[in-house]
Length: 489
Image 1 (cartoon, rainbow, N blue to C red):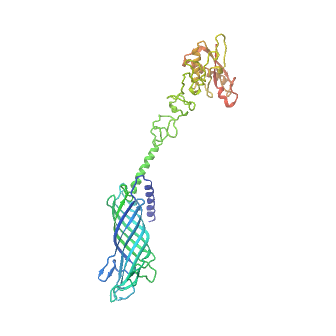
Image 2: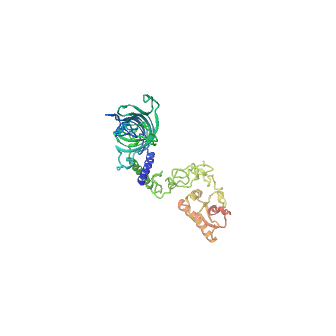
Image 3: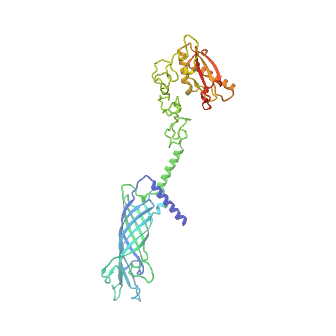
């Protein structure tokens, strides 16, 4: 029993939470009318139905209306008002004049209650894919009953004599203020769905007048309480703009749908069509090529933020804010080989020779002379190139543009010869550094020969090893891993 109650409570909570989160809208309110028969339970009661006088029975009844609010498919609340009559009789042969014998009573009443309904069928419905047209529920609540009641002699020479009452004065001749007592209704009902708007049903409630023994105008010697049953038929009219009403929705159907949606979301989390490691549900770039590095949203990385992803970027380390072409290469408006972001002379004349800053250079400023042989340091014109630790590889982003400038100068004057001097930082053995510096210088020459078709005889390869560092600071050893170009004539 305890397990069953726990199951109902858990399912009720799940149902409430499920329908609290659903996006579908429902009708929640309804109004209704009811009418039926009342049955008194108390001191003056001998038959299932009361009798008003000897030889003719008086069937007691009531009627009223209610307003209902359905919180979810299981739980609902309503306010109910009804009025009616109660009656009963007590005949005892041989003792015609007993205090509660051979008497009858008649009462009129109005009760008003606030109730909760629990549609338990909605929790036990076997078909979890369809809505229902039938439900059964239990109900309970609290309220007040206001009444007038009078007790009379049933038959004999004193038949019809007023004995006692509440809500009457002058031996039952005049009405007085109604008596009001607390009442607790408990009941069971069934309901059928006729259409989107109309329901009909049957309900029986037992109303307990707590700590009151006055309904039959008889207060027993010991403390007791009266009560009355109410069996009725009712019609319920739903109102609202939606197609479905909350109480007729199968909670398991919605729960199954939510589970299906949840499973779809889980499947979406696991699906990664382009294999970039970001699930499709979060992927903002669903067709990333294989093996391309992406960020948390599935977009291909763009290290320099120039709008061209790294895997398509010809220069993935463009200066921040620099303008680039569709390949990620910095724009060079004057076509002098120096990107606009580094060009101090952005309007160099066509065909002019420039240094690594885009400044126009002449043969003399580059170290050349028509009358004598001389040498010039790199700072005079031609740029140096730099290398990574323990490497002699020519890197595109650090060397190609500068080697192009060297090639320009040499192609402009076929008589120019260049001494290519390799250097290394102080880390490692001296002999190794001398060899590494020479490899760097040779790599630069090989590039100029291969890419620009410059005669190898115009170059002289020299290794300074670690002997002539540009920087003596351990934090700036990278500038010592370089190749310098010195023009000789």
